[in-house]
Image 1 (cartoon, one colour):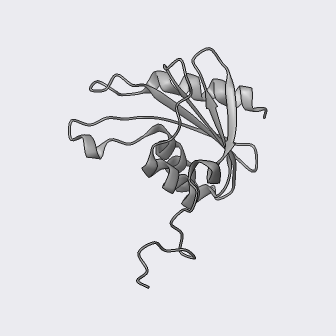
Image 2: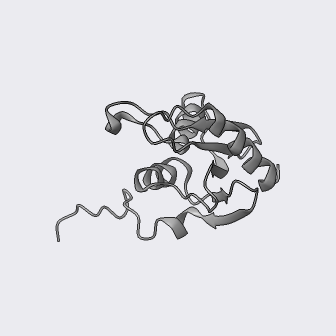
Length: 134
């Protein structure tokens, strides 16, 4: 699957967003190494800390159905510019999917592709725990 198509699927998924507080709709589409796509949208809660982002929704759906290897994750919002994953999502993406391609898209269909490690340099990992005392 080409990344333009993946971005269109993310854009379609954003229409399912439940965002009554922020009105910031986000959709995502996660491509597995076998070519299957899992979509997600952000789902807000009145207790804002319980909100889940579109990226984590797609990843958790995929993992809960047995997927373990991924190629790319597309993200779409209603913004004119590119919307990148929040910090929490960056860590979850790296933990569950590794250094995959992140496909950022604008509402007019432009895309930009980045590697996950470009978005999260010097990440916390089991091999590089930041909490280790020196």
